[in-house]
Length: 385
Image 1: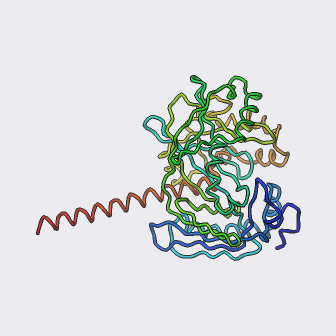
Image 2: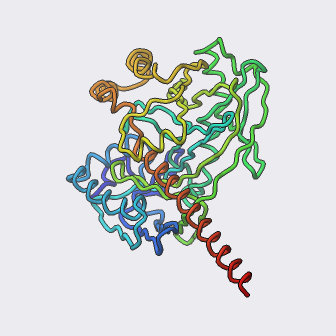
Image 3: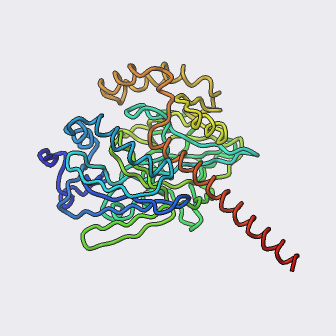
């Protein structure tokens, strides 16, 4: 399939851009032993086709023959290894169904008091639903190592403020790098124009520590003659959106009075997507039970906290009204045609990383139990001797 016969898909060497996704027709994924992580290997060079804007991504999707059927086929094979914990090797080799390399995402887990919450952002365009903080790589360095984009995506999308103390927090990871990107100054200005009741330009900056959870997967990236070997991440491959993403889970401790804002900009406008908090145990149980509609415990919009059961009305009134200002007619039509309960589903990437999070926690507990059993048996043996 000649995806490059459009100016929306160019050879990588010509497509350097803030939004950059290489179209991979070949890659390998394998898990050698149950209870361990997966290993992903990808390879590309400057002649590999690359989508350099979002229209290019949509163009590629519409040109794939029998997309839904092929996506379902690949999803089954990928999920067996990624989500079901199966061992074996998946070798993709299909020029008519390339996967996008790469996106990077962060799933924030906020500790408030004695409870942990997944922090998710509502996405009003396909795939509609609750999403993590993620985005496409930008530039060759991030293509070689998508994990470089993780800090940027999380720091740009999750804005944490204290209205009482008039403080805005930048997320400081354990390597002690201040994450106040230049784009955030533009965001604060646009936010003040749209929501003057919460003037973030007047707030003092402070740092808020975060901790990245350990993760089991490994990735080898070959870009021409350059090679990167990445570890401590989750590989997330979504056939329905033909995307490959590397994810991590960020743990952040906050207090009740802090307010969450969406830092995403669109056409120099603060999108102000609803930011939802979901009790971790409750959401995990609902996901494993096959639920496809997820109501948050609470959500934030425009600097205001709202009860979770108000989300459906908010989406169909307030958000639907605001979409007219920045979304296209096809996007609005697709939103309107999506049933209310399906609007509250998890995006495929989000469901994938949460399932991997559940499996990883179980594996850690199982290994700890095995170690304890070995220790117990050794202790008994020593007492007998």
